Length: 174
Length: 174
DNA sequence: CACTGATTTGTTATATCATAACGTTTCCAG
DNA sequence: CTGGAAACGTTATGATATAACAAATCAGTG
Image 1: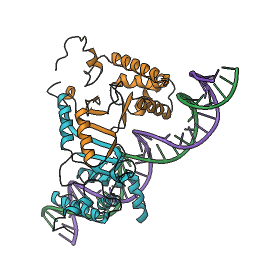
Image 2: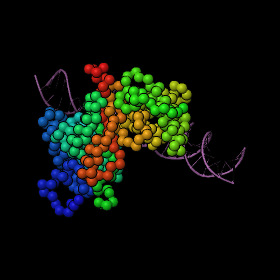
Image 3: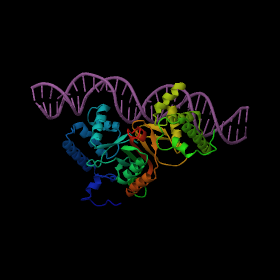
């Protein structure tokens, strides 16, 4: 994996999907995520308020999983520390809107890399750097649905969270 | 107590894998699970103490997911209520021994249906009755590993928890 | 048996994650 | 500009989980 030259049309691969390069320019991801959220909210008549926007922005600035109280800590640096409710309410909205996912195995939250699609949330979570990548879910979804079907089970929601070590944190490749 | 004779296939379907019939005889599952745990502990030189045994027994009596404090409540009915630590320590042991799994999406714990194998924990979780079934994981594991490989990700642990409605809780079939 | 070191358990305290309830403010459609 | 819905502030509490250290228990050994 080589990242020596500036990117052109591959710029999106710097901000969406897979694992971001360590130290890559998050400001691009942040801007992009906020723009998409703004657009999506307008299209669906949702209210993308200052608090909700700020929470999403914080998640994308980290570009990784954060606990609700981590977000609270960031908010506390710039204003009076809000009550936990404020953050949880913003997160509820963002999750309902498909802009954020919850990582159940970490009790943490992360910006959704592909909010335009109606997709399952399937993650590779790096134990070392804490970043998480959404992965292409079709074959996994098929395998899951097949297994469910054979049990006569009616699937509503799929939680797939794979822990391990991302390419950037493996000795050989980094 | 030990099982010198293998169970017949109908007996297995009542106590292992899939969704147990509502109202089926849990005492069989409980006995079987405890026997297996006892055997496994002896084989590996682990200490299957009274507390650990009791926690496993409680989980199998419910034959479904329970929170740590639910287990505590059951224990409190028969003795002085132990401290949460007691339950969490027992659960840690049982999880390490492969006798219990944690369901991250519920913050709950469940007896492992196939403790003799080294397997991934992949579950179908019924939203109505709370029971959870371990499912055959091979195709899912393959799909997951394939996706991880294409990202250069080194897999350590797979969390697969599918929520929905089990056959016994679907209107048509029950 | 008694010693000893390691494991397990008891106990107290606290950390961490999340929601209930209710009053006030803001938004915006009519 | 007003009435109802949505969002927010605030206080309190509930739910889940672990840290730290002392006491008891166990398993091997002399």
